[in-house]
Image 1 (spheres, rainbow, N blue to C red):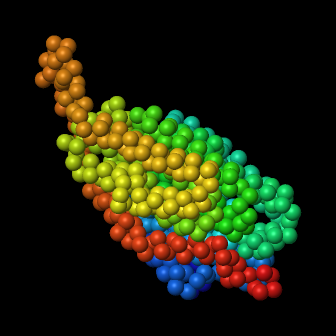
Image 2: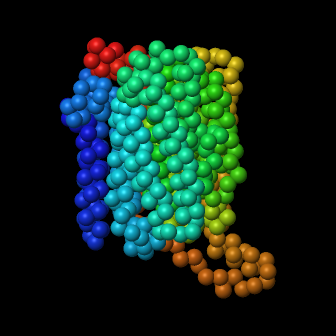
Length: 516
């Protein structure tokens, strides 16, 4: 079973190479991408089942003895993240496949979309399965390299400008990550996560505090935690809808995953919990206030993405099994829902010609299916019971109440306010995009008010939504609803994953007895 661990990474890289060799055959590229991602979903499902029933898996690559070699490790947490990420990536790929020729020419005009998309998934998979800090760095760099290309597809001025900001921030965080790894290796003589959990105990508290701070800042940039999140709203909205969806669903969550892994395995001393709690509360409030101020739906969703990262940081900062369980559940929920909302926004932009609320209206009458597709994930993101967003937030609030410190109660209050303001932001989109009159009716009313002939105003020529794109969006909505239907078993799984993170059992699987 351990031989399955490198398969998600190798399958994605192999698929990217084959797709790149078929640049003149887009149908072949689409087929290769779909087959590879389907294979990753199957492998992730097997790993999730195995780790839940038999415990973690570890594989030392190349036959090198521990702790010298490169270790790939799968436990309940990494298997769940890999499964959810691959399912969402498959849904996004199907959505991208549904683009017509004009849309492909405008949004993804080059034949490297599919190879680069698969390379991105290879980086995400490698990050989730990495058993040492340097391999985690490699995973980040693979996905960042691919994201540079995807973000600037089409070469428009807006995308190049946004890509420039994104590249600068990413290079800064990558440089800081290398500095952190160098400092940790200099202090301990290893970068293997399991081995580090043993050797870091021998360091003095100030040194541990410094090393933990370096890693936290690095991963906070990647996860878009306030005040290191200002790059995100300017970067994501300019990309094509499939790219924005996979970015919003996966990239920041890899940063959250890295924080969970390092805070529970390497630094279980609660030294930065107060800082994390403050950052969580500010991330929630600043992000959602930014969302309410937007009239462009993509930018609004980018700010809600930031705000809801705060919920995950809050659960990590609690450092309790209940808090981590709620964080794991909420992360799986948010990957799915946030990606779905960006795909729906792509459909809104296609149907209405824009994603700005100033140019939309009456979609409930002209596109009732689109209204349904937006309503379900919007309510889920807002935390309306009994959906999975409500279950995750309720779990976080209960975990916070168990801790019961004044600062915890303040962050809990910020979480409740953020949830209400998220509902307000979604209601704003609903009121202005789906209710009211259509832009044509608005222009005719203005013509009547100006004593002009309203019959001279031509009807809008809405573009038809491709069935494959609608089907992919419905598929992700169903997957999101499945998180609600099976919330009980999934929450039990998340609880078991959280307990395993805190009890140190992973070290016993990865390291021989003499190194513990």
